Amino acid sequence: MTDSRGRRLLMAAAAPVGAVLFSVLASALILMIAGSNPITAYGDMLKHASKLEVQVSMLNRATPLYISGVAAAIGFKMNLFNIGVEGQYRMAAIFAAYVGGAIALPGILHILLILMVAMIVGSVWAGIAGILYTQRGVNEVIATIMLNGIALGLIAWLVRRWQAPGEIAVVGVGTEPIESSGIIPDLNFLPELIRDLRATEELTGVLLVAIVVGIVYHVLLNRTTFGFDLRASGLNPLAARAGGVPPKRMVLIAMLMSGAVGGLVGMAEIMDKGRYNPNFVGFLGFNGIAVALLGRNHPGGIAIGALLWAFLDASSDILQTTQTAPKEIVDIMRGVILLTVVIGYEVVRRIRERDEAARAAARLAEVSS
Image: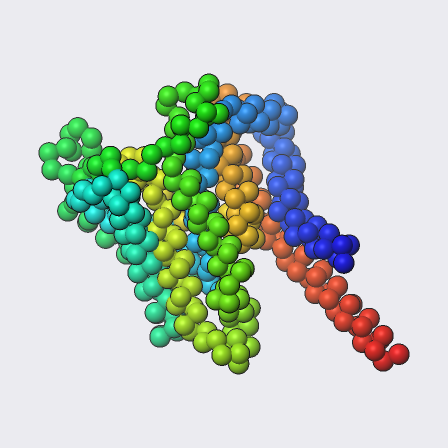
């Protein structure tokens, strides 16, 4: 039993770990061809990441990526490809920022209102794709891609409509500023962060939201009957239907949940800027899909994937400064990691199927004898 469990753990870690190692080797080869020293480049990346302020920056970058990864993972658990997290978090962010700037409430109530608005808007936007899928058979990939385009156009119009009057020349176009009561405090009160930390680096309080999201995701999908039904519907809709679980309802619920979590992706930026502006951070939804794939939809794996992506972001900054290697090498590493991990998971799946078939054959042989 122990050997079997150890083998399963080894198989689960083989694809992502092998993908990262292969990416490092492939990138080193490319760097040598380009005339750069890979040892020097990797040394600069690791040295830069060892600084406290960079580690805080990495956590800040990883926080929205983690939430985005969980949002994508919920869809993956249902065998759905929710590629619309990009539009869902942007729509959620602008509505949450507008409501947060228009209403003043005491402390925690103001923050909860902003978070709830973000979750509701993200859920509704994803729910449109869910309804199209269940009622009209529209593929969720096509529906969410189209909704992304609609969201970007709608947001461009809303920003102009909801811009704070008289502040364009001073702070740029954007929604009304959110009062301090609606801003989640940073976590720099922690003693280990105060020490040697520059005043310009603040650990986002949305990290706590990300931790709660990860815990709820794990408990709901792995420790409840609903989570079992959701995973069963994703693995085999026909068998789930025979067991009394309506697949269409589970698809809609999964899309609503994925959108609700996706709505929280932009909260780190909202809490940092105190408003929504046209330069709002982008591509968090698409990067979240990569993080979910790398983490194999497990909350712990998604966290590691988010930190890896944040490390590569920070590395791009330092490589651009030191000029020891072209910063584009980071994009190459990401691409190689994703390609390799997808291939690796397929290889692992086939090995598992072969092992299961072998065990089944062995048991049949024992019974027949």
